[in-house]
Length: 326
Image (cartoon, rainbow, N blue to C red; front, side, top):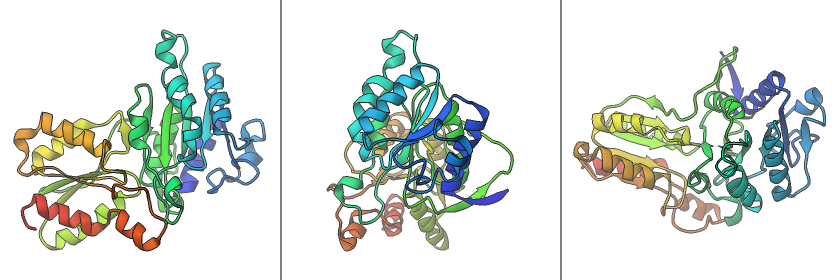
């Protein structure tokens, strides 16, 4: 095993797949000459050249459409958005063409394309650069949605996404690119649609994904000192979702807390809540609690931003609530 940064895991996954398959290429704003806005494509231009690592104009609709058409013609493009907030400019191509093309063509065309980049908040970036889009894209049949939380998962899942014959939304975080973690020296690929139990526990299940899951780890450590054992599930893939892992855990712990960095209405946690109450209601010893951001646009002020985002104390309070210890 070796220890690398999240951004290096992303670069390794893309580079390994480009060496493996000449149909794979990367395009986006500043991915080539500048080595990526977050240095997640560092060195790739030197190795693969400007025909396979392509700097685009600031036109998300344009290069998203080029990517979709290219994928329909046998290529496997990786389209990087500097942030998924900018994907809204190109969302018509993603939703109305990439996601629907297989069905609309009666299976004559598939669209093996990966749209990747950062999602959710990343500090003082303001309301228009701090939105979480996992539930938006997961609402669309035809798209797969992946949100890894560490370098190991990121590399293995990105390789799987690039090899997949359907369009994949691959979401990262600006605040995770410097995170370090162990990654195997040898090649590996992780299956899409399989959650991972990051911490075994017996008293309460905590489900989360992406960078916000780190506060669940901190909360679980503090709760352990009080004799409360938390099981933490990292979804990794939002769609298709691994309901079975969640249900199996809830049937063991009888309690569920869902932690998500997104607005409260109509999010991933809402879907999980429905699935659990419909399939494991008799196992629940307490109502499900979900933890989200405040129901407002993200503030710019660091003081307000701290209040807007969930923190580990919110997780501790929620766990104690379902344990009837609050």
